[in-house]
Image 1 (cartoon, rainbow, N blue to C red):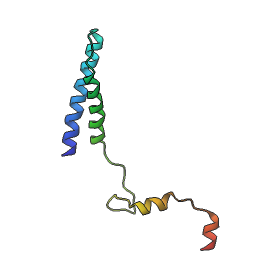
Image 2 (cartoon, rainbow, N blue to C red):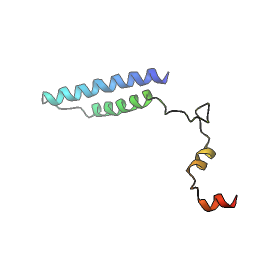
Image 3 (tube, rainbow, N blue to C red):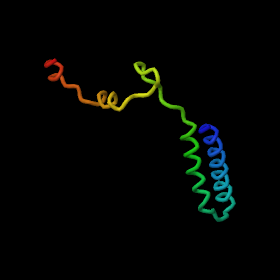
Image 4 (cartoon, rainbow, N blue to C red):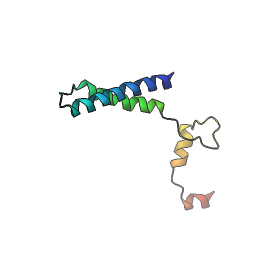
Amino acid sequence: MLRKIGWLLTLVGLACLAWIGYSWWTNRPINPYFFLGVLVLILGNTLLRRPRETISGDPDGLVSPSRRREARRHKSWIQNNRE
């Protein structure tokens, strides 16, 4: 469902971007609302983007916050000798 909405928002954003380009090319005034359409284009592309690759140890592709914290923690050689 979100991918369909993403495609719709992308098409609307591209139409706004085309209208801005046409208005600029013909020296017509550009309505500021069309610049919001460019933001809609960015939102549509964000909804269409595929998620990153999954981690091999995580079959669902979801990493728990504690596992993320553990991966970011600094691994010191002193701590490894104590264990």
